[in-house]
Length: 213
Length: 331
Image 1 (tube, rainbow over the protein chains, first blue to last red):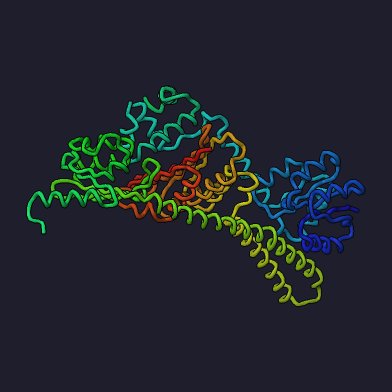
Image 2: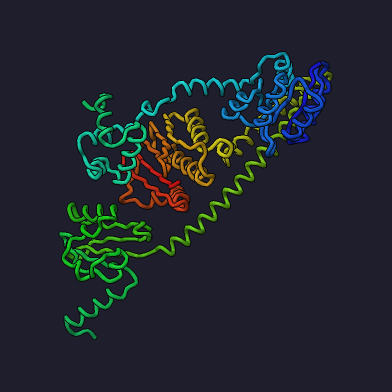
């Protein structure tokens, strides 16, 4: 028998889940909680196998609660059931120790399948969640790690070339039909992006990287 | 009755000296022939008005870059009519008009600081109210209606199981209902997100802008790059909201009007400042002639948001040269 705790700030939703699980022979709801504080209170007296965990539950939300409970009860599996589809939430919850993540529009069969999976020590991510995770992983691979690797925009390269050619801000502004203040912002952005100290550093960088011959 | 040249002259001088705005007249080479007390005061010139007669206009406009550029164009390339609306000069807002007149050029400087401040305050109050309302609605949809829809679907799922002895047609109908509920739930989620992304509140402006670009990248054929160098984990809430809304507005303008191939959004923090730049390589517009474009398309709201945080907003564009917007906000 898999014992579960439902943590969600909406009573109707908790009841909805509970009523579905009622018909399932191998799963039993042993408690409900409307926020993370109540979850931790309940765990003092009884520990379920799986917690169905919402993320947004007022000030005692799912992320912090999962971190806290995983420290004390590492064997309890956390299955997230949330409205949040953004990767930030998914990753925060996985980091916190959740072993599954479902969006709230999951059908009842998927919820049950996921409960069984995490109870058996496996992970379960719905299709949408997996897709988001994969996209995040491929995107972060391409992400610049060091400042110096940050890609320069076309406009920045244009400005860098004109700086190397010893044009003043005013001259660059006139050549590119932009205001002097914009040129200055671009210049300072370049300095920041490339991690150099001043215009001389920019010129050195441009030569080193072959931006100018 | 004005009978003589002297009387006419005195009459004109007295008008010029008493109008409620600054007047400067220059000749074709840019030398000042008239400069009234009001212009002198608005431009915060140090010497007496008389002292500036016969000097070149460009010499007194060193710290008003845009106007100086315009005047320099007028002198070198030919006179044009222009208007700079609510232009920030020395802690004031000036509406400056330039107009060719007989063998010269007439500049009028109108101090609109008070009107502008009143307008800004009203707009800001409106924007703040809108944000509060958006946040409330978004939360209610996301945390209230959303879960309710999910609950309805769950219950319907439970009902489905009991429908063993009903016709295929009924089963089909229940299936359709379940699909529709899912669709509504999705719509609610995306509307709630558009109103106020929860990632902005929970994870900050960098993540929220990142998500915004990622989402646009998925649905649009344009390449959107987001680069950031923000050293502080979270910025003050009002600054984050401002940067997000401004980024959102500028991105949506570029997507809607620019026909761009590439859009670059950058958020760079320097000790005391945060700088947002949005650039596209699209069709652009003429900020010089067409100040009505830069006044429209939501840009006025950007000005108001940015100025309310003591920041600066510059938009640069030329036909076929794309649009380059820069926002600087002091931290």
